[in-house]
Structure formats: C-alpha cells, structure tokens
Length: 94
Image (cartoon, rainbow, N blue to C red; front, top):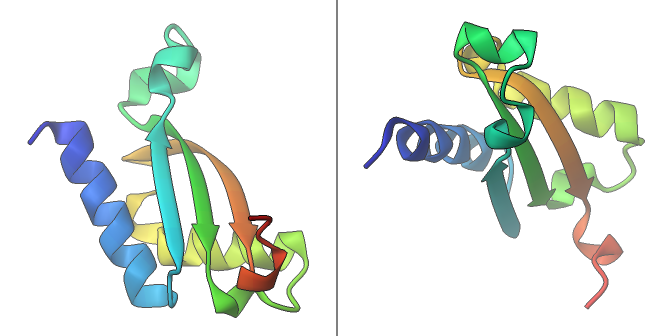
C-alpha cells in the first residue's frame, strides 16, 4: 500500500468514526496542483464526497466544519487542501 493509499485509508477511518457514512469517495487530486507552493509541505490536495445523515439540516458551512473536525489530526501535515461535497441521504440524486 502506497503512502497515499495509507493516508486515504486513515481519512476514511476517521470519517467513519465521526459519521454514519452511507457513501464515501476520497480522490487524491495532488497531481493537479504540482508546483503549487502548498504542495511543497507534503500535504496533498483531496476531493471528498460523503453522504451521511448527520448532514441533514446543516448548512454547507456547518457540514464543512464537521468534516474538518473529523479530519483535524491530518491537517495540515497530510491534507493541504480539501474540496468537500457533503450531502444528507435525501439530497442524493439517483
């Protein structure tokens, strides 16, 4: 398992501890930011797509705060930038 796969597995573990995850996708987008000043720190750029009932009734800022709280131990050493798509189950379009 690569270091990035290990990182993503740790992110997933922490998210699953914090939320009743119904769907989760973590994508490493670091290659899109090669040469970016923040990339030099070793922290990666990730896109997170998560569906969990805990997001129901929360505005986007509150959802992002909840995700950041769940991943706090990884910021900024492992996560330099994070794009978050957080939905409640009833917001998912099938």
